[in-house]
Length: 288
Image 1: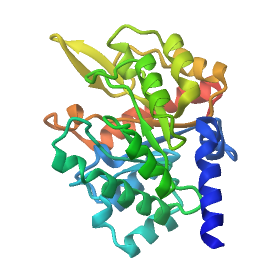
Image 2 (image 1 turned 90 degrees about the horizontal axis):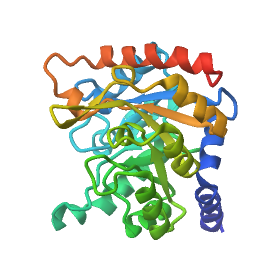
Image 3 (image 1 turned 90 degrees about the vertical axis):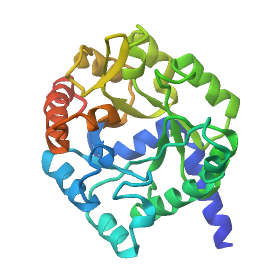
């Protein structure tokens, strides 16, 4: 009987859709809550990164489950997970990297990594496990694995991937057609192919459980990703459209690997600068 109850609860949470996830995440506070992850803080212990994120003023944090990061599930024992859970800082999302064109030996590891992330998610936030975001993922069987494990798999379009526009991502979601698979809206990947904020939001935001923000540019013929505010995206226009569409949920600041590997990169400075740019705009627009 207990397993049946868990199954029903899981099904209800997964079938709720992107809007249900977003609304639940923000029901007691502002329409938009701002998070940043330790993906851009690989040099910091997980608990130090969380303390820094809270100190800066972010509302929540994303934890990176990729191999080699301090928050990789295999590195965090029961006590470490309890400390994260008891810290009080919301963890609305986790991040992994599943590559559809990887070698077969790597692809065979993906279901196990999804299960490890799901167990981690339940350990640190049992009442509302964070979703698991990935860029190059979205196979039907991966969505099924995530759903059976009680978490949602969120995928984005990527400018350097075949799935690089909102219509292609919507097509992917429709083809997989699984309640555990949802979208991420990340305009930084659409800016470089000259798509508008308004059109891309109208296409994708209703299907999205998470917004990711970063700027982008073409430098010497190559795509370059930047911190939010370091490029040309007009975030007043951007969040004005979010407000107009009535979307509520978490907005994640992404610090890309390009930036992390630059000489002199400072994870704390990057997190502070991004917050200093976005937080006043969100307040001005009336979303935070």
